Structure formats: C-alpha cells, structure tokens
Image (tube, rainbow, N blue to C red):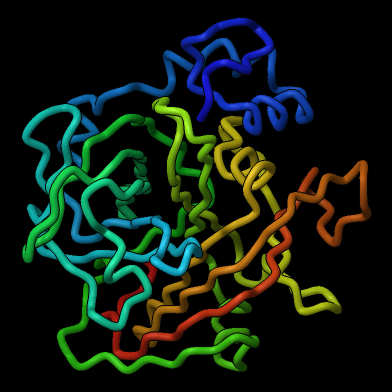
Length: 307
C-alpha cells in the first residue's frame, strides 16, 4: 500500500489509492478514511495475539511460484501459532508438497493471514513478510494488524481440523462439476488479493479475507464467471481496493461436511451498480472472477458441522 497518494495529504495513512478510490465511490471517505491509523496498526494488540494462539486453523494468502495468488489453510492443535512479541507470529505447520503454495512460503515472501474463531465469530487479520522458514514452519513479521466485524460468519463447532488420512488431488482449468457444486452450497469462502507498487511501505503486500452468506449467495454468469456479491461491511475495502489495482485473486472453499477443499486462482474485476446491472438486489458492487486454474483436495479435513 503506497503512502504518497492520499488525497488528504496524510502521509501516515495506511490506505492505498485503490482503497481510497473505493471508499470514495461508496461514500465512505468522510467516515472511514481519517480513521485509518487508528483502525490499522503496525503491531498486534495483546487480545489479537492471544486469539491467534488459541486457534486450530489459520487462513493464508500468498503468491505462488507461478505468479498466481492462492488462499489456503494451515491446521494444528491450539498453540501451533505463537506470538513472542507484538510484531511476530510463529506458525508451526507445513503444507503438503502438492499444494500450490508449498514452495512459496519462504523468507521474504509477502503473506496475509486471517485468524477466525468460528464458534465465537471473532476474526483478526495480519499482513506481513516471512522472516524465517524451516522444516517446522515459518515466522511472520507483521506490518499491519486489524480486526473485522463478525458479519456473515457461520458458527461451527467443533472447528475444522486437518484430516490425517492421505490426500488426493484433482487439477483443472475449467470448472469441474464438483467445484460448481461446492460453490453452490457454500456459506463461507476466503479470498486473497494483493497490492504491490514496489515501494517499501506497510500497506504493500498480500491480504486474505473472509466472505460469507446463505448457501446460494454465489452465482455464475453466461460466460461461466463467478459472481460474488460485496455485502456492506467495515468500509475498509481492502479486497475491493486491491482488485481495483491488481486483478489477481485466490479463493479457498472448504466443504465442512465432506472434508474437501477447493482452491481457485484467476483474475477478478470489480463491478459497480452504477456501471452495470447486477444480479444481486442487496449490494452496490460485486466481484467477477474469471477462472485460470484450480485444484480439489479430497480427504483434506475432518468433517464438522454448524452449531
């Protein structure tokens, strides 16, 4: 995120030009833009650090060696994430060798993480850079930390866990029937996006965000593009702002009944109601994803259920 383009001439703002443009277009600038430095910190408060350490799952967004964005999840017993100080997360978990990000979580890589408690519906985000990696996991140097509201989070108990049985993978470049079915029945998914103008500023990097709604809230158009309604939220516009400047996106769906995971990467554009008719009545904009490729991991999770 660049700090030299703020129309308010506040060089300390955490917002980049894509976020500022989206905030302005949504009529949220007066309310949200001046609060940036109060809402987005350069460190994790103690309550965020404590929550991360209690989690059995961590959502990750990063760029693959292929240049595409991917979103994924890491799992472990509570305590597999540690925060020795307000600017560091140590993650003791690894991805399977077949995973599209298996070779990407290396020192210097930009990573966005999301901690979400699906029982309490709390969620906190952190963005930063991997400082070290070894055979046990990696350490993340946090450059941005902020919380999100509990809107659209489906409560689940027990929380999802990694299956210890053997994974099987399916790779595709066109929508598979099973992938379409998983999307049609989903109430939750995660989306990775990125902003990188090459400047060494805290708001540069990858972000990963939660999206949710009632099953059926996602649609496909006649060109087989995935249509994602952008429901009213905290007015940060992190994902919308990133996609405005860089169309790359990575999506993760997890079927908590069957234990399957669906990974998608593609390009996305942001469509505003005043520019184009939307198939959703309750939103002012949507994200339209064109699939590039994806994978389905079977036997990935222990089946769980909503509370």
